Image 1 (cartoon, rainbow, N blue to C red):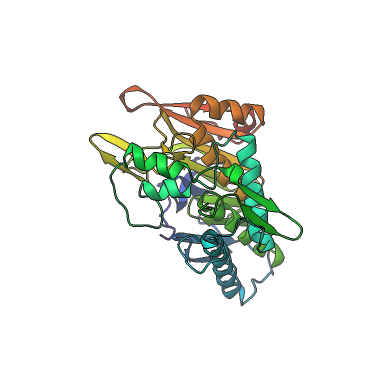
Image 2 (spheres, helix red, strand yellow; image 1 turned 90 degrees about the horizontal axis):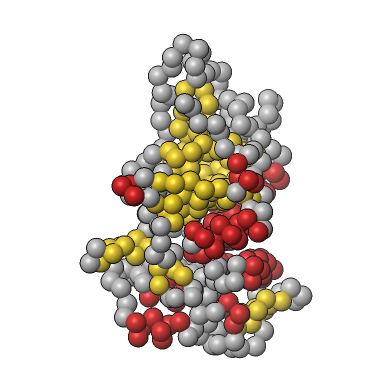
Amino acid sequence: MTFAGHAPLPCTRGRGGYWVRAIFPALAALALTACEPPPPDPTVRFTGATMGTSYDLKLVPTPGQTVPADLKQRIEALLARINQTLSTYDPQSELSRFNRNPSTDWVAVSPELQQIVAEALRISELSSGAFDITVGPLVNLWGFGPEPRRDQAPTDTEIARIRERVGYWRLSARQEPPALKKERPDLYVDLSAIAKGYGVDQLAALAEMAGIHHYLASIGGEIRAKGHNGRGQPWTIAIEKPVVGQRAVERLIQLGDHSISTSGDYRNFFEQHGQRYSHIINPHTGRPVLQTLASVTVISNQSMIADATATTLMAAGPEFGFRLAAEHHLAAFFILAGPEGRFEERYTPEFEAYLVPQQP
């Protein structure tokens, strides 16, 4: 999926409109425009496919600044390397080879893989296991992994059997020399809830290395922004209303120099006998999260952390998740499903500063 560009909305005298710059499953990036003919937009944009979705990197050079001619090749090489390290869909990736390795001794891995696993385990500890990168076998069992989709709930016996393989405490990460160790030979690590965020951080680092300090980097619904857009305005992000089959804005965010991620249960799911089963699995029950919480949005300094934390709070549920966010002073925005299709917003004080005031 690539970004969809839209024409500016009609202008009224004395008022500006919005120009939708990008649309994601959970987020849409918007840039404010004026009614007067704008000056040429200096934005340089690179897009392509990665991690089962698409990436988009918008760069805003300063006057007289040029974008390196080989930057597209460098982006593609970077993302290919990350896939070769973290993908569970590529049987030859470093992670896939570790998952197949039956050893329960320390296995040497790249510093990159060790760093990401160590961060994931830290978040697992802080969340009492609401985030668990060993939950992959359960994700696969429910039909949301690289294996063919089944669209049918597994039996209690199947869930109990697979749960024996799940538990972040069965995985260890060592920094020097970088290595991973699993307690069970059949432990399976899935980094899909943190890998796209990591990739966005690496795209941002690539922009910085090119000397460009105004950009918007995204992979799927993971976004990281810095500086201003091509019109000289702050990057403004829309949180999507969590409605199946619709694209509507819930709230606007002025992101500043931060990352944002949304996790929800309204895009990737199947239904059976009138019950919806989402791709977000509760590691403690082995089943998809069934609750009133529709989506969680998190703002952080790193996309990797925002990505993993949004999933964590979504899996934790509306009460425990919000308590986690409050205790750790996270900038988090919760949308709860109410009666008759209405939604209720709940957010931490740390998030409130980013909200664009709603028009009366």
